[in-house]
Length: 266
Image 1 (tube, rainbow, N blue to C red):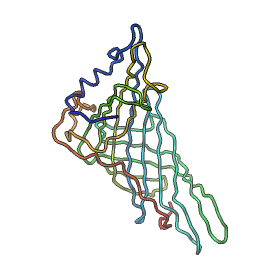
Image 2 (cartoon, rainbow, N blue to C red):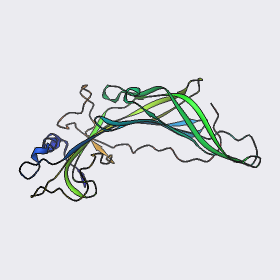
Image 3 (cartoon, helix red, strand yellow):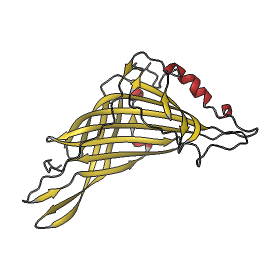
């Protein structure tokens, strides 16, 4: 299982992840993998109703996926005895469509076409499905200090032995979601970056541990952090993981579910 160790051990652990350092049979090199993620999201308030919007970029180098996700409160009902669901949508993006500032100071995407889907019911029309095409922009700017955490693990994937390190950096932020016709909503949230490296431990005889292969290194985001220290301005975490003090890692934000139809349209 992943376990947190003193940040000063981070550099030594990363060095230990070089494939040639694992106990492999002569002429064999254990498989290794890396995984990167950038996530920025805010919890919105629209006419007193909760919603959310987020940007994400995840994957291995050369094979990454990016997305914009939006959830808005339901449209108000014009008829008695009616119901409207939350409006949700997701749009795939290219790496170039997401702007990530140095030291996680800003994450944004501009003029993204997206369709929000929702369901409704009323006595006159019965059940209906609603599509709402929009063009939106989302900008999330950091408001808090950069914090980071390092975890090391010796169990990966489905329980096979490995050497792994997961580094997380995060900071609080605030953002604005706007549409092409001038509607906007604001909220607060979190900007987060993760980097993982894992290498399968090869047993004597050249056989890896149980499982189909090495983990993708994604790991899990830590429930709390240490090293509440600002970045040195390089845009990367210190290689030795140093930084004094401790800080709590904010839990991943989630908008509370709502079924109340009280949000304005666009």
